[in-house]
Amino acid sequence: MQYTDIAHLTAEAKQGTTQGTVLAQVTRKTERETKTGKPYLEFVLGDATGSINLKIWNNTAWYASCCAAEQGSSIAATAIWRVTDFGMEATDLDLRPLTPEEEDTLLAGGPELRATQEAAWQTIRQLVEGLQDPRLSTLCRAFLEQFESRIRRSGAARSVHHARRGGLVEHICGVMKNADAICRCYPKLNRDLVLAGALFHDCGKMWENAYEEHSLVMPYTEMGELLGHIPLGIELINALWKKIYTEAKREEWRPLSPASEHVRLHLLHLIASHHGSMEFGSPVLPKTPEALALHHADDLDAKMEMMRAAYAESPELAPRIFQRKPPLPSNLVSPLPSIRQD
Image (cartoon, rainbow, N blue to C red):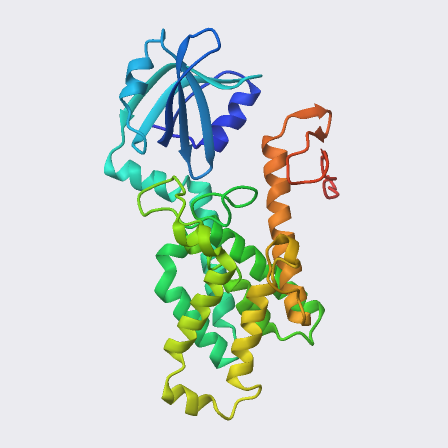
């Protein structure tokens, strides 16, 4: 059977009625009533590409099967789908449990997303392999080796940008590529430090925005709520540094300049200041060229993802004009394509 993901299904349903099957998890199921007392089920399906919020009325043939589906369960949902002014609608909805193989496919995302995230992971590894400073190289390699599984299943945010399972890998890759390009434009920057900062800048989100191993629902954690990803990232870097900075390494790296303690301190500053302002959560402002470069590399990647999502999801107000999607500050206009020569 051919499957589609929620992002592609939504795009097709916007163009007109379509029939298809999605692999998804029941991320929320709530019994509600209309103002006139008519009962219905708010039934939310999610995968790695997005979610569908359905109203299942109690007089439909599929109401009982939706009620029976447990929140958090993995299902295949086959229906006739269409998008109306009230959102997605499904008729002739049929649900069945997933096989173990299908559940693995669901958690990994569709083929396009899997390919994107795998390519992002390989790019991250390649950029780390190219680091020249042995302190930062050792630290980054230890991080990737120890936390690969957790990195690859975490989101980069709870909403706004890259807010999906594996989104952290996509965002880290984008920030590292931006940082690499900025360093080529400004060769006096400490490239190793900026790239290490790009790798670690959101590492605390492995606790603030991590998905559980077999879930597509991002839970809230007490650690994430009480500390936030910047303090958590600083704590992680210090713990990793302490682990790798053995007596043998201390002697091996003693002749290196700048001193190892300065390298650690400047890396911590990049993590602490990467939001760019205290208003947005950084405890300090960027105070070095490398910190400023990282802030803009991070901000650019996040905003480009916000714009991509807005073009895909926002209604068209007029030809080539799309409704504003917060936190972007204005409506969007279709970008100008590159020149073609037939």
